[in-house]
Image 1 (cartoon, rainbow, N blue to C red):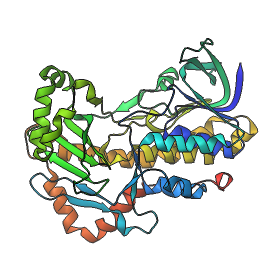
Image 2 (image 1 turned 120 degrees about the horizontal axis):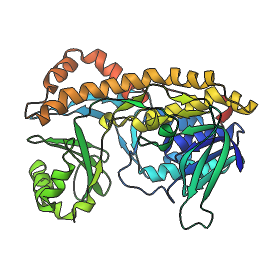
Image 3 (image 1 turned 30 degrees about the vertical axis):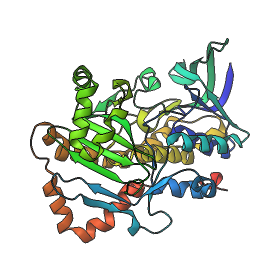
Image 4 (image 1 turned 30 degrees about the horizontal axis):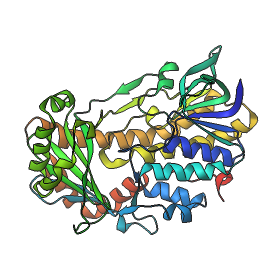
Length: 411
């Protein structure tokens, strides 16, 4: 059996950041990623100022800024029949952390993997899927895994002083550890797809354009050469959408965005729709002896605000900062795992509460055939403009408790 100081399951942003930080501390860390590459469409691709600052603190800012990306300089609240109300104008923040970087997630993950690979104690195992946990008494002591890609060696066990689950909202390992989340109702799901964007078209790259219809909505995220479209409808409607067929879906998109009606044929079939089963949940406890959940494995986030990736990365930073001393000694006590949860629970609760308010104000009325209750929210923002204009951009950009790179990881 192989042995590591820490095994991180999941090669997403949180898992890769944690692996990099631990390796820079000299901890022998292995990251398991079940896929053979990072090339998957419609993963979150917002990199908020909190993460950009972290990248700079790690000495990686120059390389990061050379990656293909566009900049989003504000977040707006969509108001049916009126102009959106700006929630956060990032240009009010101090440069260089006054924008959200929009980039394909696979570019970001490849960048992190390359930097981590320079550390002698870092190992990334692609096509290694975690299937369960190993226990010794009541303590987690390792991960069972299987290999993909036609490997002759079908799998094995990787022992570790600590196992961290960063394997997302459908985490296999949190179930294996007996951890169950508290679930919050979510009124909608999202269907992602792409439409071509012509070079002659105006519009700010990284802009966000909302559209509302009868019990449906859509957002368009402007990319350099395409629009990333998110069609939003009541939870549980996936089977109905697919039963209606592709022509009916194209009609819906053309009605919501008449200016894009001339290209809906680019949606070739229903296979081009990527259904996101939106969830909002939070573990009552994030750990057991020898095991910790972070990111979506600990708290699945709604796509509202695009904060999930950055909240997960902040979890990773706090995990490294708090646990490296114990990992260097060879054993992480339960009280240290509890300290990670205590530090990260408050920002998680705050951001999930904001998302739940937005769900109730916008989406519940929309799918009930009523006018979304965003006008009162917009009115509040206008009445309290000076306070809101100062507070909201920073909350969205950095979160309630932003983390800094620990000293051992800085270059």
